[in-house]
Length: 412
Image (cartoon, rainbow, N blue to C red; front, side):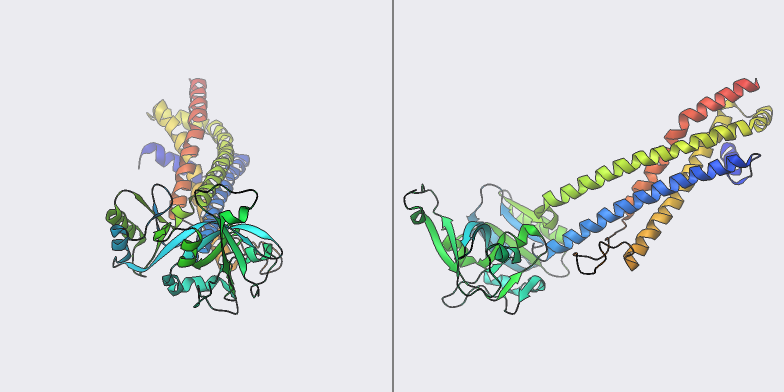
């Protein structure tokens, strides 16, 4: 243990000659503790919301999605796509055609995204978790095409899940100008019936915009027979998504992009990351202000220890050694505050996880979750500790040097 560190440690735990110095030191530590705990809690809340949103997307988005790097459609019979379908880690390959169309009922009309999927999609048991209604998941019958609508789409059309009359679907014919005199001739028209179920993801992006139907219906509606916009890959339970993604990318080569769930919703998660970063920056400024309390504590300690400084100097301590004593003193205060703050923040987050103390509203079931979601990540805890340590050190560098130099000159 170095001489300056030993003296700095003794100054922290020893009683000061003036009681006010003890109070100011305690306030300094308390300020760092509160700011550090706030950092841990806020970052953990953002992690919780990110995890909650990711879980909502999980039931609709596949673990991996293959799309063309250029354009929108690609050939369903591409040899590379066929190889991907038969990879050992792929449990369920689903061919997809996804494009915009107009749907109409007697009461309203609405632009939606029609998502046509092949019959393998029916084996996706996770999708059943977001279905509502008394029917069963089905895409077509012998002469009937079914549409599984988002609940908000049906609401906008003025319909319920068990609508009787088929919904009309229109898509423009590609490459043709619309005849203003008779525009309907320039649209392909088809009908969708209800299988007496709808889906509810609790995300407006899907519930208010999507209609799921058969692949044949979508290919016919958009005149894209033998084409598709995506290949969705559902994996075996023991498969590692990152490893499978690399295998798929190697199999496909150039010309295709392979997207995991976060990349499929990159806009949403980027916004959440930016919000988290901004919160971190603002709380770091608050932490910086809290660390300034250490300056007052150290200045009074230096004044209080004038006799000790003279004694240490007579015993052979250099000016640098004495400056380091008070520098380490200030840094130790910030480190103690950091450790206590992290412990407090993690403890509060664990309590929130276990008991849901902070609620969204008074009535349960009004929101997707009743209490604020939190998730503590080790990387965030390490980041907070490093942040507090660095800010604590930087905040005492100049004042310690200034006050120590002033006191040493006064002694001389």
